[in-house]
Image (cartoon, rainbow, N blue to C red; front, side, top):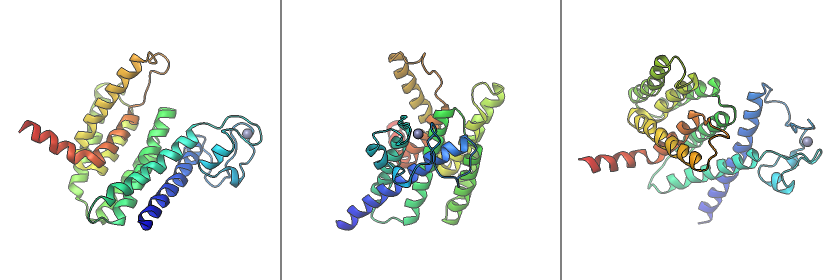
Length: 257
Ligand SMILES: [Zn+2]
């Protein structure tokens, strides 16, 4: 009992720390700054002291304001940290329900969720996808999964379907319907999910996107910020397919046969 509880706390803390790293990475990548630099306040450019840089805790203690200039700290920071922590706890919870599980699967899935959350945040905020992240992650997860016995054909076919689906739309619409970033997210989805779950995830992305658009229209917020990057829905759909995809497919096929 104590072991399980301390594992949850450990995953929560690692999630917080990686969420904080994700925020730093997002800012540096967008502003083309080095990862080695110390964090600074985007308003007054003063270096942030280590004790003001503790994930979640500092935001609460500082009441969301910079210690030096009192400007607001973006809500993105605590939200991403907290969500990342919850996702890591979720992964541990998910695997602990199995009779046997490997630590490798847990680490891999935590890494995948880190990458998906990064794409989600970056695409939502800047309406663009960092190719270095999607292509780098595709290569990394392809090799790592191969090493741990994944089926190369399944991953390759998934990648072809995922990337091909968007490439086709890109060519037909001359780049109007989808962006080049979506093609590369499609590639990553295929490698992470395999071909069956990739098709499911694409379908889920359109359903989630459709539902969200209706909600935006009903809330009459559509005029405010019409553009929600499709990559945002793709990451959410990949997450759903990763953990519940097989169940959804089984349920679906039982329904029609
Ligand atoms: Zn400041």
